[in-house]
Image (tube, rainbow, N blue to C red; front, side, top):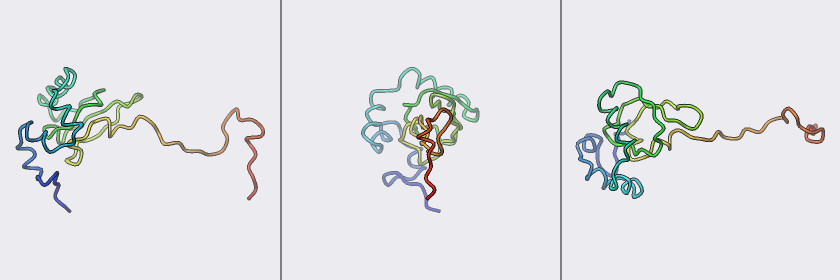
Length: 126
């Protein structure tokens, strides 16, 4: 199995970085967010995670950038209807929590449903 690397840095190197160095190896949009600082809600979530990393945490903070301190924790991210349970893996570093909790289901078309008109119930024999 291939070892995880991000922009030429190993996972151990990334974990050892301070926030300034980490900010320089992620994408521009996330870099800008980290440069401006976390919101109060994001700070509160990080504080809860640092206090008890083994506990399952639920959050509606979909715009939180995943940082190396969050590796290995189980978190539930709200998608508008329910909490999607996920475990933070190394490949998720630098992305946002909302990217992994999709808000829309894929459309699955099938036979006409309840209340369909007579003409839409027609199904050809071929």
